[in-house]
Image (cartoon, rainbow, N blue to C red; front, side, top):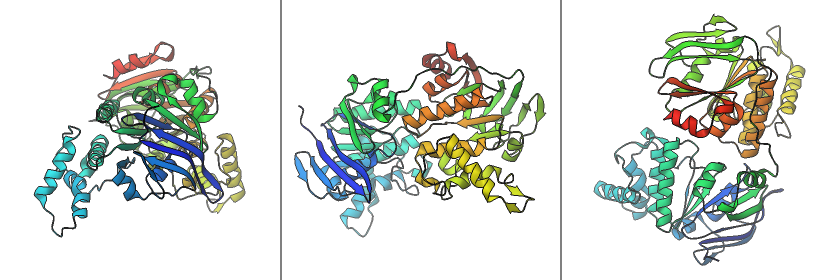
Length: 494
């Protein structure tokens, strides 16, 4: 067996009566790319916090680079060569790139005055390790997500990193940016640096990782060489369930379209977009990040104003100047960022479900009907299988997949005709993703018209009866689901 860089064995930790990790082990070898996968709440973040000294384990042993560690502090981990790049990158947005890169070194020096020439030297040396080309004077808040990530990687390499842990590093990246990140990861591998790549995206796991470890419910389920894994095994290890991989077929399609776009245009975003949507079908709209796909969804919901063209509901032109207009015309919109746009996170699960139908639950516009409210909440918790012991709990207590179900429930309670979803399964685990797809297919089967806006091509192909490809603000291709493939869509996108 190859020498181990990290060997964490029989790790246990509990928080009160909750056993977060139960006798799990993780081995990472020098210069390998190792994928750590599992559904939300499986223990991925917990093992990382134990390795980096944020949490102290209840049992088990940790050995790094041949040295056994008892109690680990974050400084111990950094000094040993362990660096973590979290999803928020832990950068100071109001500081420049060079200030973010040199800050720790300057603070550690104990000097009372900042030597700006030295700051520039430190920053230039840091970015040279990955051939990263960036304006060192630029404020971090003005950078793209991919550029912020590269600043975080450059900073990690300043401390002689032997192991870099990347937590869901591709969540907000375009396909082009993911490819660039993978090139950097392979470059780090060639330098003997190990990467622990935390992800639940199957295609990325197979493309980049050498070996894998999968946790489920705080237990080690499987570990081995990625080449010995396939989609079905990966999904089963993650969820403990087997899923049918079948495409959606629209069966009960309305005779007349329920929504039509006729030459809809928003200057600087999209131009001359036309299509018809029938009840009972799922229409996919896909394109690159800056293709205009999101702006189109926002215009259909009245959050952005089209400059010309028409929107028709049931054959009649309508004005949708704001979300209130859209709701009156029975159109709902599930945003990509459910945390900041789709939910009132500190409020209860129940409050979030009924917020869009609060008028319906009020008698004489004065008295709030609590019994009716509780019945409505119970109905949607049961129907969408929202996993909670109490709908009175805050929405923050739920996983990403269950939070997305709350957003769905909120709109379905409005008795919609059209539901638009932008990135419906972004940031949710595999099991929840399949469940959400099943819910959408069932809704369409019951006559709802659904639009999925997504760059997750397997999601689009599996769930949509038709697929529109948007490029530079224009619809450039339409595919029927039976005729489409990922490569055909990518060719049209480019």
